[in-house]
Image 1 (cartoon, rainbow, N blue to C red):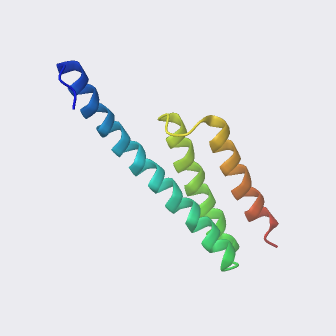
Image 2 (image 1 turned 135 degrees about the vertical axis):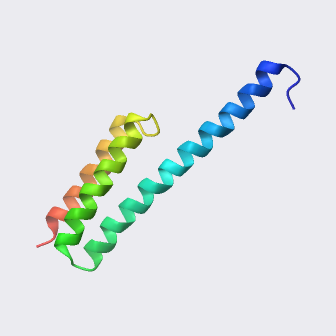
Length: 87
């Protein structure tokens, strides 16, 4: 355990930020699962609306610094491709 006051504060701040990032990542993963669930169910309209929600969640996470921009672009691209392949 840290003895210096600033080090103790760093531990607390890091835990707070880690919890925030974890919650945001969890929300993104849930949104992505909804997209792929709609694809599995062959429901194109639900897949499109879930894709819009997931894209929004991923973009917000990227803006907050949870994901790197290339990571978010890759995730969105793969989901879009999967939804567009439905026919």
